[in-house]
Structure formats: structure tokens, C-alpha cells
Image (cartoon, rainbow, N blue to C red; front, side, top):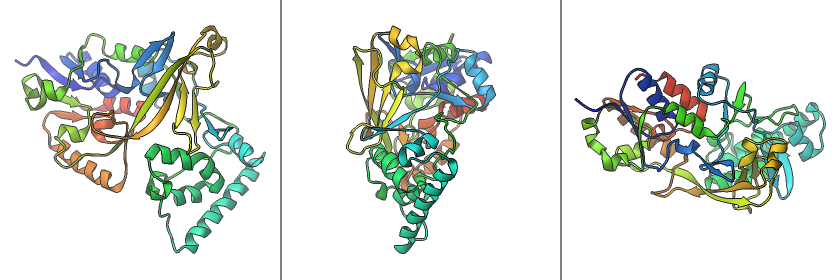
Length: 376
């Protein structure tokens, strides 16, 4: 008799929710992760009394009440609202694009004035493209300008996007930007979802709740410890690692973007006054600065904690051995990912789930929703 019903590879949100559900059904689970901690990319480290998002900012948001109630059954969520700010050559703009942004950019004060300015610039971009003989946007640069105009593109999109993808916008495919959110109200809330917040005590509280009573092994590489012989250990496999790695890269490697973090503790209570500040100027090498305490500390609590922790994020071309973060959704990678997904469908007793295993970018709530609905 095999020792486990499920061997779950990856202790992130997808794997942890599956483990929780299976354990509640009376199944025996083993969760393994090659990192030395649980939680995947939502893992938090505590520094100077501050919960530091080790793998980048994670802000929970959803309009799915079932998912919201589910996560709140493990951790109480605070009132954090994501209102990022963009810094371009020392001038600050609110994100997403809203009336505060347009007022700062053009001095307009009414929605009608903002719409007129945007439509004027969109028309100019479209006319230029057609004058060059193009009936459809040929790249991201053209696509963005016919969606939002030249000013916002050059100040708030161009440099940031080029840093994010490591190549000029004129060389990026147009379909990367299919739409750009425009709000004709003075609302700086980045998300439109009904529910939003950060677990009080950090995301480890949520992960520990999901995995309570579940056998786990960290620092455990699935391929080295189990590999093709995993069926000797468990009846079924839940795999949340990179899909091309599972198949030994037999069709070729999928491309990713990764992120390098420079994190430091500062001997001051408040560095930038906001959790997230994007740097949209191309000449600034990092994409944004995260000040972690602002996710969970508000008002006087910010100053009651005498130090702060900030992380600068550098978008980087992925190389083997790095942590994969963002799928590169160009034609070549989308085609290759489809081929790997076809192989995955043929695997018996294996469930592939999550960002790496599906080669799709996911927010946290949709990952949890998929894990709650998965057939196990």
C-alpha cells in the first residue's frame, strides 16, 4: 500500500489549497517544495517587525465572495487598498490612469476635458500609423498610443514596459497591451474588486492555516527525490512547477522574465509614504520600490515602528537556475506552451495547476478559485 494518496509538488497557493481540500476528504498528502520554506511566492520574512514580501508585492483582491470568505477563514485581512504612484523624472502620477493622472499630466479638471485630450492624441497616433501604410498596430508602441495617446504612453508606459520586458516597445508584439484602463473619476484604487486587503500577520498565516496537519518537506527537489518513480510514493500527483521542466524540456524551453530584488533596512520610519512606487523613466534601472510596512501599518503605527524595509525590483532576463516569474506571451512561447499543455492532458493521475504549470500569469484569487474547483 502506498503511503500517500497525493504527492503535491509546490507549497504555493494552488498546492496548499489542494492539500487542504484533500486532507479534509480524509486523504493522505505529502507536500514538497524545493525552496527552504512554504508559501511559494507569497512567503513573507519578518525584518524589524515588518512582514517583507520576499518575492515581490502581493495584494489580495477579488470580487468572488466564495474565495474571499475562504481565505478569511484562515486569516483576518486588513483594509489595505492598492494605490500605486508612478515617478517620472521626479514628478508623481497616480495609477491607474484617472482624473488625478490627467490633471497632473495636462491640467484638465473635468472628465470632458480629459476625454477630449485623450481622443485628440489617439487620433494623431492613428493618423500617423495609417500614413505609414499600416491598418493595424504593428507593435506595442503603436497599440498603446492608439489606446491612450502619446503623452501618457511616453511618460507612464514606455520606459516601464521596456524595463519589464528587456526590449524596446517597438519590438514587442501589439497584443501584449489589448486594453488600458481609463477612469474618468478621482479614484486612485488600482483594483475594481469588491474585496481587497493583506492578511494581518502576513501571508504565512494563510499558508500555515491551509497546511495545518499536512506533512510537508522543504528543501526537497521533486525531480531528484521522486522523478519518474513518484508513483511508488503516491497514487496521484499535483504538479505546480514549470511545465516544460516536468517534461524534461523535450520540446524546448519556455521563456520567462524574472525579478531581482535589492532589499535594505533603513533607519527611518517612512521612506516613500506609499507601499508601491513605480519608476517609469527608462534611465532608472529598477521598475519599482516597495516599502513593505505600508501593507500592514497605517497612521501612527508607521511611526511607532522606527525602521523601514524597502525593496528595489529589477526585471531580468531569465536563465536556468533563476526563479521564473512572468511568462513571455509571444507567438513562439504561446505555441510551445500549447504543445506542452497537450502533453499534460495525456498524463494519467497528474493534475497541473498554477502559474508555472499552466504557463499563465495569475493573480492570487483566480489560483485559489481554480484549486477550490479542481477535480480531486
